[in-house]
Length: 410
Image (cartoon, helix red, strand yellow):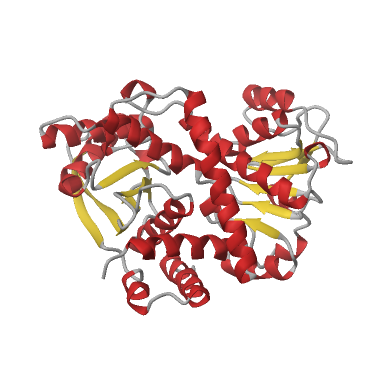
């Protein structure tokens, strides 16, 4: 398995070389500011005590408080958490929000825990890291296998220990607990703003633009619906078990597709469609391919079979670094995850801002603020790509690191 932190650092080195980054700043950005490793004892329902390992990587806070999710997964590792905190720094700086990069995780298969055990684990994690977080220091959020409910427990535990309210300490909360309107669809909505800007650059007419979307969870499902409402033809979509396509570039009837999924639990045998695998979906002859499920989907194994003109990464890390190089050689434009899916963290930042100012914005206000930020970020990354004749991922890294570097004081 390739080491995610080594991958992240090779991306840093590549950007540093292009932009001629100051050597001192380059050295600073090679390590997180701080990584906490904690042991979390949890009393299980059977009376036994199990000790779990948790991490919090605080990569860099030159732009503002550290920001990033907490994931519960059996494969969480210190290198993964460090890499993710670096990418969060890049993502926040790409869209120019006043946040730095952080990430946390606990090594656990959360599906094996009862609700009580999960709550004790979540509160136990905060008991170990609470002195290092806060709305002015480090603002966690949900990630893989963590939910608004878990965020609620964490905030409650933090405020108990702090002895006062600090609603902005955690984002991704339920609306009733101070969460932001629009958060559920924010990642997809941000991605659509990016697609529309790209369509202008490439003179794509929405009605004639065919889109295939891998994944129909919170991101892919909403992306499909919003793109359809903007006039794009979504011709294929999938879930974790497989997908459906209408041949001859005919748009799917998304209402029927979602209804079938709701009724049967899968997309298989949806009327008037053809079943395909997730692998086949990636290789369809479409204009825009949107991987919005898992990482490492486009690899050296299948990259030469990709027929899309454009890839818009809505998942984190769906393209391996080696495949990236080949896509560039083949002239396929790739809008990287740090730009394409940054609508989510931007609205998390809005949640934090509403909490610290004690304000409440409507969904319309949230999206009215999100759109110009996504459009500007896209334009700046495009401009950087043209300036240095580089791919969009490297351009996003160059732009982001330039911003962070300007704030670092040596």
